[in-house]
Length: 243
Image 1 (cartoon, one colour):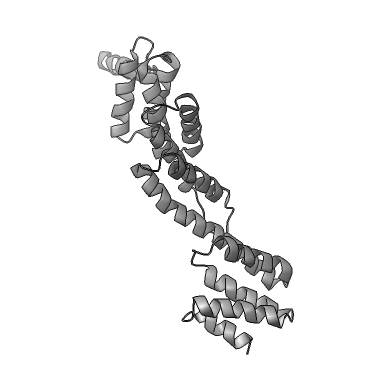
Image 2 (image 1 turned 90 degrees about the horizontal axis):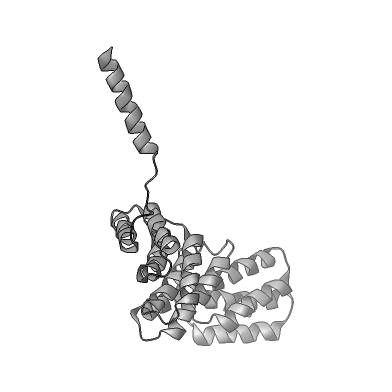
């Protein structure tokens, strides 16, 4: 009976300890930051973010608070909590524009949007946000490694934006809404000439002009396609339409 009581008491004590929240009120900013960093190294990103936020809340005027804003944002990003990361980064950018890590803050904000880009047949709001944020990195910090990587990622956002225009254009074309389709394909021709979609966009112009009986315009579009992409399969198809 005594052994049973001892076991029950031990279990109760362990349960009480497990349920008791850690008291951080007496911890210094550096101690909280160190705990956050350790959790980050151990990939416990959620807990790491909580410690970094405690530094901000409990020691807002310490040098560790500024560091914690950026580290907390990174922890949120690694945890997949993009909205929280973006919010933290925008606060950092607003209140610490002269900080040595400001370029990285802009870059990480762009990456948060970039990682949420969906396929071209879905809503592209994150594509536009990623494009704008990454453009800021290239414009504001051109001589940094962040700008070089942001520039590469910008190419994908442009491809995705062109892809969405093509997707919508094909939809209109299939539903015989030729004017709306033509406007979409013309946008690709005018704004996204360096993308992989340009050849099809030019062909679609030829196709639509042929369908609506605008022979001269169809021939002009086919000529442009043939001059720029003579070996393309889209060119071959276009030339057959205007014979």
